[in-house]
Image (spheres, rainbow, N blue to C red):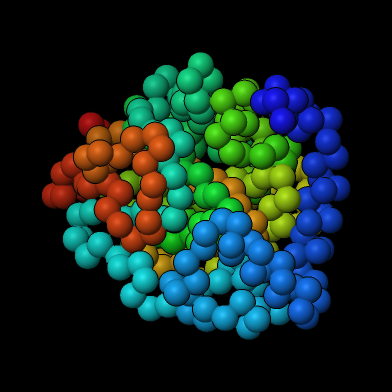
Length: 298
């Protein structure tokens, strides 16, 4: 199919309806039919089931159960260097680089605003001015649980309603403002080096976005922005360790990280199209002895 036609169809297709239907089908317990679909998917995308905690396709009651399958222990070693951040997901780097004048690169010739990505909060977006961002695309073959790049405490979660365009590379190159117009869940964490955003972006036929602390965020889908604030300490604080699971997608999508100015640098060799494995080295702190206040004044 011609690329222009593929893009054009996305504008006119009933994306919400298709996504709801896909979600219902993926949650059906259809016995042998479910197993047949799972086996086809494994062959189609070359999935290595030897990495799964349960490698038997027939063990999954629904396609969703298979899609968010756990990996066996040790399949993704977590980089143990305390000054190194690890990749949050099995993915492919779409884009990465500096946040310049509040803008992030979507694809060649396309930029979008951090403030729009983060739900319209200018004060929040300003915390990442002159920092770094990375966009990681999870393809259908990938492991679809999302983990923590570093130790962090959850400060805020923001649900931002939006479209459900595909987030594959072709769409990123052709649909302006893609990641700031699609539905997404923005998670803001406090870390030893300052704030960190981890944004889970929805897409066509992504049945749901979930977090470990709140469960399913979407569906149902809301027409307005929702914000949840969390305490920094005490029994109600949500603190996650480096490498711990923080969320998951039922069917594929994208993770976007934002880091503050002068806090981290990406590891050498990380660039667009680079494949990533959860737990491997992602970025390193620039000044391990700097405090959050030092970084803010940099």
